[in-house]
Amino acid sequence: MSKTGLPLEGIKVIEYANYVAAPVCGRLLADWGAEVIKIEPLNGDDMRKVGMQWCFPIEEDENPLFEMENSGKKGIMVDTRTKEGVELIYKMLQDADIFLTNTRQRALDKSGLNYETIKEKAPHIIYAHLLGYGDKGPAKDNPAFDYTAYFARGGIAGTIMEKGTSPGNTIAALGDHYAGLGLSAGILAALHKREKDGKGERVTVSLFHTAVFGMGLPVAASKYGYEMPISRRNPPNPLNTTYKCADDVWVQLAFFQYEKWFDNFCDIVIERPDLKGSKYSTLKEAVKHTEEFVMMMEDEFIKRPYAEWAERLQKAGIPFEKLATPIDVLNDEQCWANDYLIKHTYDNGHEGVIYNTPVMFTENPRGEYVRAPKMGEHTEEVMKEVGLSADDIAKLKEDKIIK
Image (cartoon, rainbow, N blue to C red; front, top):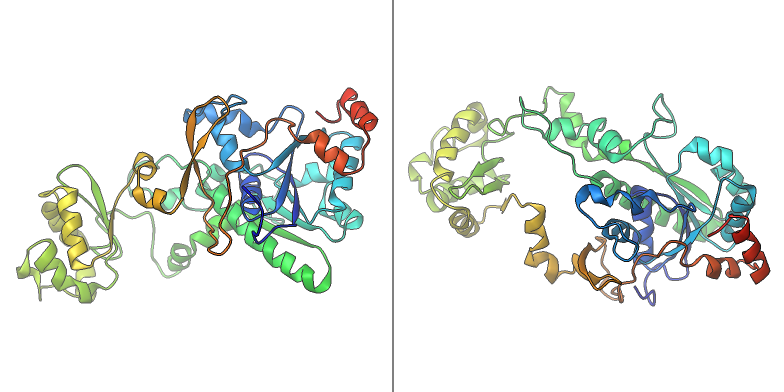
């Protein structure tokens, strides 16, 4: 995308990261106008290879999974297992603002790309580190993906399952995206501080902490005896749950103003005026009969298709939504009206769909979409920018330091 006029125009990011959580932070910064230079090993980021698990093509000219997390960036390939490769990164950091990584701490210590070393060589740098479990504690060095650190240990998978059943399949990269968004916010705060005192900073976000933050309500409630998972027949209130419609579509209600909305619900939605003034009409009494009332409402909602219920709920002013699937979201006019999804034509002519990152600017909207880099596409360009001659670059290629 064109960087002109965007908030982070003039900011340079060196991204030394793989998979999703830190790279999506890099994509956010690129979308907001920063120049992001992604460093890959000589065999490429593993994200170029794993998309087949979700039916994505993984060819160089069409790789949607890599594309989604890395659009708008420049891409170089450097062997950071070598002293010469690490020295190149030190050079790049001299006129950069942010070093972004999700590399495990032991590997950073071994290579000399840890915070202490980079702070010494480039004290102005904002060092942004996406962690699995945090800096401290017995799990700090454990390998982490959002399946494990976010969904499993963070309590999400064990909370949203229907009580008494098996866990559902987790959603790949969901926790990664939220952690990356959180890290981008921390980076912006650190940049603001540096404007005042000229000093760099280390900013960290962990997958596990992101989950704990998101799970704040049920975790705090567990202290007072509220336990999850729950059954959909035993929600916090009987009209804050899901109901199956006649056409097998499920509808989610968000009935948070219980007494205010109850009469309209009875008159307009379910046409049961006999329930007004009953033991179900106040939240204080209804929660004493939750499962009984939910089962009664199941018998009501199964009578009509979703479209009819949607019309009635809309008329009554009650918040609701269909439980959508990914294909529903793909075809949701609300997404396309707001550019939440965008179409992208790959180099082979195939058209795909890419998500847009979720922060939008009114006065300085994003420009034209810029695809993700090919393997090593900008290596020579970036090496020249740090002062290397053509002979230097040729020697580094010959020695397999860059590609």
